[in-house]
Image 1 (cartoon, helix red, strand yellow):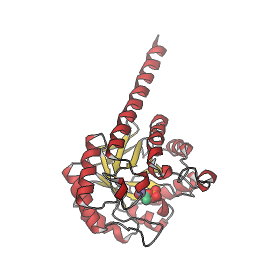
Image 2: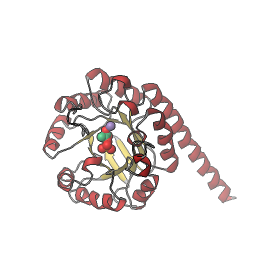
Image 3: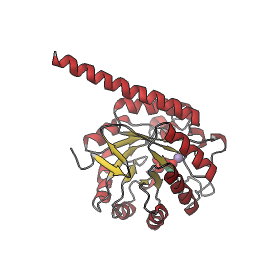
Image 4: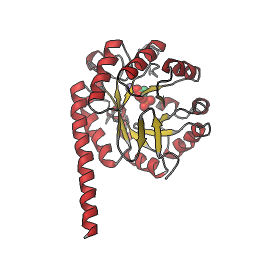
Length: 275
Ligand code: PEP
Ligand code: MN
C-alpha cells in the first residue's frame, strides 16, 4: 500500500476501506445557512462538512466569499456537529488565517481547480502538515496532477486527489459544465492516491448530480464531495448545481444501497470461490 492509503483528519479516517461523504454549501453565506445544511448532511451520513470562505469566481464582481467571517461560521458549525471541515485556500497569505480560525479543530485544505498547478501555493500548504484535497485543474493531465501533488507531500502534508471534471469537446459543446473523467479516478488510485469525486462541478445542474455521484460510488472512488444548500434558489454561488436537503438524503440512501450491493456481491463471490 502507498503512503496515501489512509488520511486521518480528527476522528475521520479517509481510506480505501469505506466511502467518505463530504457535503455542504459551495460558499458559507450566513449562520442559518451553514448550520442548517451542516445538521442535515451530517444526520444523513456525511462525516466532513465543506464550505468555501474564499471563493475563486470567474467574475470579480460575483460574490467572493465571506473570508474570515466565513471561516468563523464554518468552524463553529464543524465544532457544533463534531465533524472536520474542508475549506479552500486560494493564496498562501490565507494559510495562517485558516489555521488560526480553526483553533485546533480538524480540517482539510482544499486546493481548487484554478490553483491545481500553482506550485508556490502547493509548496506552502504542504509545509503545514495538514491534509490537502487537491482538485484536478480543468485542463490538467493526470501525470501533471501527480507531479503537482509532490510539491505538497515534499513538505509533509498528505494529499487526497479530487476528480472534478475537465474542459473537453463535450463540455465546450454544452454537455455538462465540465466532463467527469472517471478514468482519472482509476489512474490516481493506481498511482496510490485516495481519490474523491466531485459530481457537482461537472454536472453544473442539480438533476445530473445524483446520477453522476452514484456512478463514482459504483466505480470505487474513495469518497464524494458534493454541494448542498438549504435554499438553492438564493445561493450566492453555484446555485444551479446545489442539491436541496431532500436531494441529499435521497442521494445518500441510493449511495448506501450501491455500497451494500457491492459488499454483498463480493461476499457471494468469495463464498463461491471457497466451494
Ligand atoms: C468549489 O469546490 O466550490 C470549487 C470552486 O471547485 P473547483 O475548484 O473544482 O472549481
Ligand atoms: Mn462550487
